[in-house]
Image (tube, rainbow over all chains, first blue to last red; front, side, top):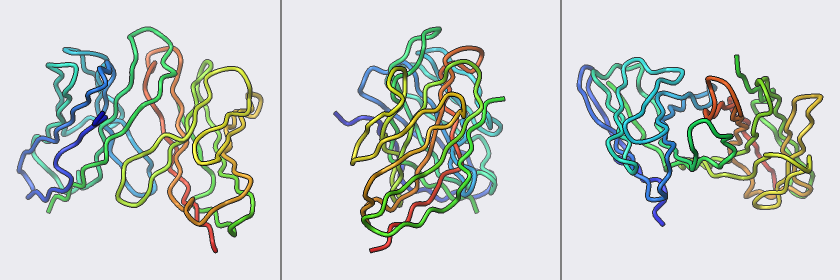
Length: 117
Length: 116
């Protein structure tokens, strides 16, 4: 299995540009999420989805947009990149159903290193 | 509010010695607890988790963690450290109820360095 696949691995953007980080999983997981990792701050949740057509905001959603048209894909869009969005982004997924205890393991992609200049 | 604390930014141990990476949490209900490891320029790899049952959980690469409900702690341990264990370790909790059901909350991470 490929697991959770993120693209691109590295990207440099200019301030004001937009771009999409792609995330795909082949494990038929309902739950998918995006995190950003910054030094000394751990990982913070940006957006998450509990199934196709359902998304919600996490801790730091401003400046990002998501959609979930299929179970497999969960792209993250930067609408107008800012230097504060320079970070490492991780997509994650797990097997889970809404309203049920969610002790299932969350699996992470390899990360996307984004620099906004 | 849900929170996870890893009180040590860095832990340094000599190879062959036991290691402990500390984690405490503040989450409503009976949360699920996880440890992940991150090697340089890589994603997070799952090490182990506590769901229910025995308070001592065994995971990958010889790691184990002890859940202590009264102290709301979930410390990661290994009896004999290896140089290859050097990495960034994250504790995470996942609430089992409420509006934040399913979300994963992370500590800030602890950099483990094992000296040869």
